[in-house]
Length: 225
Image (cartoon, rainbow, N blue to C red; front, side, top):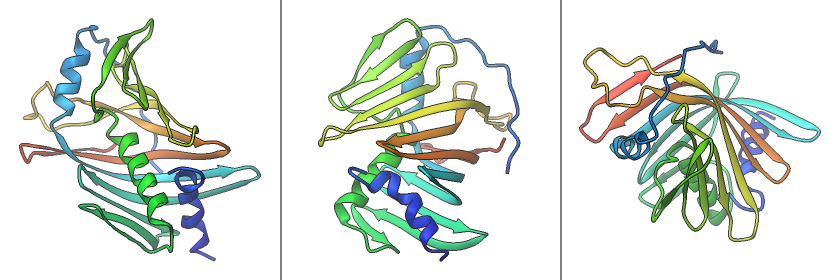
């Protein structure tokens, strides 16, 4: 019975494609010119690690679970838990995929790329930046990332799939990373602690309980809200 829960949580990314208390902080306002600098700084991030709370919805069902996530440019590992017990995993290392579930490799690959795009939203090839009223829109042939001009954080992302479907990611609830004093001021100190990922009638809500960045200079900084 336990194994059904993480399997269903994965379905959001697979079908047809791929408790902390929130603390309010006063968000800083950024100048418009910050967008290029923000992308330059974020390009130094080599690894993201996070502890997540997940809620999957497909009417009329609603299921909950927890997970730990490790993502780098070439590697990804998602460990899923239920009631504190490990009940499954999904892993990719240099293109080689391992899974505790007997799932189609192509569909798993799409799920992995969906997770990467969700968290590594700034890693986008051959992009241009459009200046709209409230957002900077980073776009290429199959992705649109909407960056709030006020918060300089992602508000929404749309991924256009080959079959015509759209994977829609919405971000909210900025949280502050409590970096050590020696960390340079140029590093990003905010992230979105809530994400909603929707594909057709499948919806996955993600709450980030802890968030860890590793930069190319082998410096690792942790922020827990």
